[in-house]
Image 1 (tube, one colour):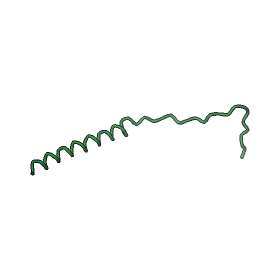
Image 2 (cartoon, helix red, strand yellow; image 1 turned 180 degrees about the vertical axis):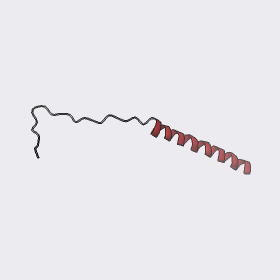
Image 3 (cartoon, helix red, strand yellow; image 1 turned 90 degrees about the vertical axis):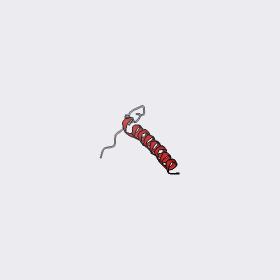
Image 4 (cartoon, helix red, strand yellow; image 1 turned 135 degrees about the vertical axis):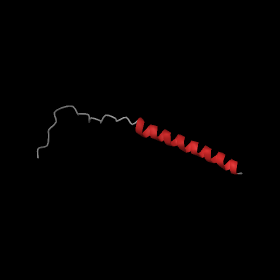
Length: 51
């Protein structure tokens, strides 16, 4: 029974290690900053508000 629990513990440690590595790789290493979107300008002349 104790060897089974040791075996199960090792499996769980491996699963946790792999999932944490996956999330670390996805969130930190592959964090590509996207370019900010530029608003599309409408055609024609635009009047600016003056304060």
